[in-house]
Amino acid sequence: MKLPSDFAEKISETLSIAAQSVEELFEIYEDKEGFFIAKLRPKQWLDKAQFKTMCALARDLGGEGYLQGAKAWKVPGPCVKKPDTTSTPVEDARGKESPKAETRKEPSGVAPKVLTEDKSRPPQFMVPVKALLSMPFQCRTNPDGPEMAELTESLKALGVLQSILVRPKPNGLYEIVYGQRRAKAAEKAGLIEIPANIRILSDQEAYEVQFSENIQREDLSDMEKARMLNFLTTKFGYTQEALAQKLGKSKGWVSRHIAMLELEKVAPGQLQTGEITERQAREILAAPEEKREEILDQINETGEVPSARELHEMRRAEEPEQLSEPLGPQPEPEESPKPLLTGFEVECPECHVKLLINHVDHPNGKVTHEVEE
Image (cartoon, rainbow, N blue to C red; front, side):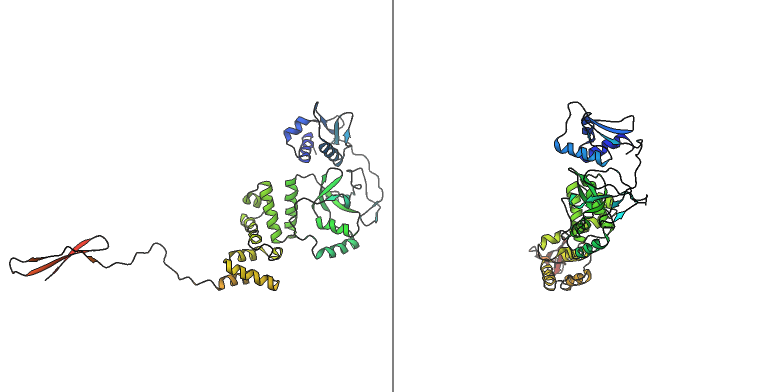
């Protein structure tokens, strides 16, 4: 944070209140020592949950929590002199000593921060596994897949090599943004702590980060992606076009994946949709109802989903061949002219030849006459 306004923005995000409400609740300024102060205004108060959240936020930002006499929270700004750190041994998640690690006071509920030698990487906290929470919505249908046992054995041998990302919650707890399986495997492996990066994120930001990270690692099935895309559009009001821009994908990619959810409506509980790709789902949904039932029955019997090409051939096999027809309206077949009952007989006054005159009604509305001897 560079300015007191940055502190105000953090408060707004953490308490999930508007910026105007923050201004009404707090007087936020920088004192002579360079600390940012958030002081409750007269006749303003916080409920119990908000109070605890503010204390946790202040500690997470390197402050001392609540200053009871001042009715304020104090966190260091960029101009505050940083205290000297001393080198003390720190144990990692496997109990091995790291003699050159530096420590300093950090948020409640986590072990001291481990400052790595690589300054280009963000610092990591060692967070207790028991202090971790899962986010309410999970797009994964089977987080304990076959690879969980392998991951658990790997963590027993090597520890957690890649940090998870968490966001602070009240009472010294942390919610996992991504790294859910690593955290669960670490617990099964008997680890007490796990390395984590801590960021203050809103609900919307947390879900966006979680989904983007999983897409980049290609760690989700197409159906899991469909569920997450649908959740983001319904929960946060994204249009498919805006969501595509946010994720760096095309609008067609988003719409095709969301359309996969129709498969769970037409075939509820009939097959493992998590094993079906977007292209396979598209071919199944495009088949006529009777043919679709036949395809689903075959998948249930064999336990295998045909490739998208095979599904395409299956649904086209029994479609009747359509003859090519010229485009545009076609003329109706021409009707034969119909005689009218207006004929009459006349006699030529010169040669006395008798003639029969008949009138004819044509389809185009024209009337003509014919002469017969």
